[in-house]
Image 1: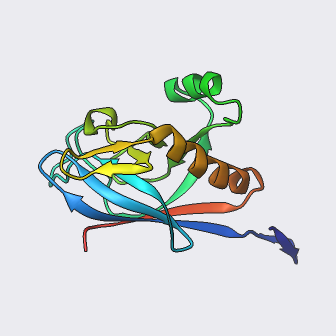
Image 2: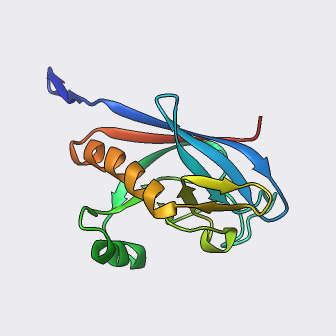
Length: 159
């Protein structure tokens, strides 16, 4: 909900938290929550001290999410999802660009992005029901962005 006073537009914000809890030499698994309620699991590439393109997880930090209305994922998702208005796009990630939240099941699907799923196989480092998780998350986040509200995602390293 936007509030205007003295020419300033004060917007509501939505805060998403990803708490990483499992890492291996190939993948990283986390829990994504909105308002302290578990929404889904996340899957990323492994942690690296030196970034390797398409093979390194996102640095821990807080990032604004915006809608990205161009690119291959956007065009594919416009066809796949009637509700699609743009990809969920993390802003100003150090040494990264084009970091999206999208569908996928293994670290091979990430290419440095954040995948979401309703289930997680911690032994294999995979997630399942990714389309269900993405759809649910998207339908909570996109309306906030469309209303002009700010959405942030904070990624925290393992406990």
